[in-house]
Length: 488
Image (cartoon, rainbow, N blue to C red; front, side, top):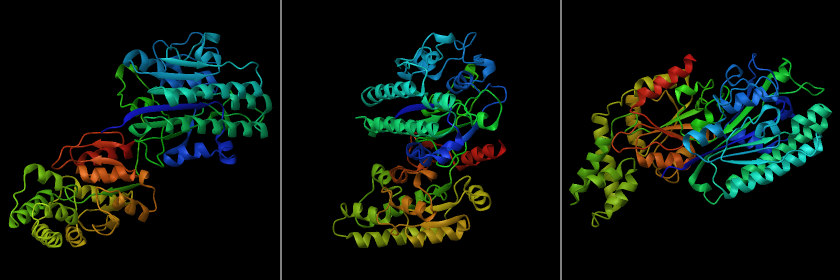
């Protein structure tokens, strides 16, 4: 069953990228490690002030469209180009949540509100314009947000933390500023813990974006064009996000995280984050070579030789499974044969068929050539015995693969995650950085259990899209997508 998509955006105002590299921010680091943290340059046409920058982040359009040119929002065009929380609530009827202390974001102060009509709103204005009062306001915001995120069901949320920016304005980017950034990271940790504490968390697919709007000069302040002021950053992790990806500004990513295709009339300027894998783990049978019919016929032949006629449903259930698993299952229908005998016969029958003819699937040769010459690194992960894998490699050529994993070489075979975990470990990568290309439900179950993203190219059994899983007709579509990526 597909998990339910949810998205949380945490905005931390005015955090310099170089500060993040000096101070401990373990919760932001955890998001970055699961996905990425990347610099984002504020556009030359955008004033480096909170109003214009947050409007661009939250609406997905540039300053010439949303019309927020300063921290006074008067004359804006947010009715035409609304924030994501308002657009999703009004146009799609989705539950959205906003929590912020800065008044123009959520009240009529100074031409606001920028976030016009979320489903639910938390606001705690600071008691005074001081760093301490802003820390207290942020603490209250996070307390309320934790309760909502834990016990209620917002589909898209934005939580704003303003204390680091105000601290820099009053005290510069010294020790007090760094302490405020560390405190904001602890508050991010509270929000992430709230997500994991949700009773329904196991059935949900959360995308988390953490973003700042601009930087600061050393003495505090912004609005100019220096690199320190014009460098923002974005961190993101989620089921569609590949570890190590290097994104443009987020733009439509909130909508992508919810599987919501933006209407072309919205004229969003950003693009969804490209998710480029750091490694590709390829299944063999049915994915690179059209051997699923050969495996099915081998299973049918061995079953018939031992007195059992394989039904269509039974045939579908053995696709993607190892010889040992299939033999153990078949032993229940041929009780006088023995699993060891059945496994040996399955392997010999299948090997003979593969050696006679193992035609390539469409796009397989071009994909292997691309991986061999231009990367990323690739591994072959098969449920077939080593003798069958080696026979296919004589046809495919093994040059594209840094490593290969055959049945019996990990503790458990597919649908368990062990083969994909082994391949990722051999490549020195976490599984979430790897894209698995699979054709069968059994292989997909193994890849998703390992934590990998999946591109499904169904051969015999139908496959439905799901969070972290795309479905394509064949491998040529993957080649086309990568070619587009290289041309950007």
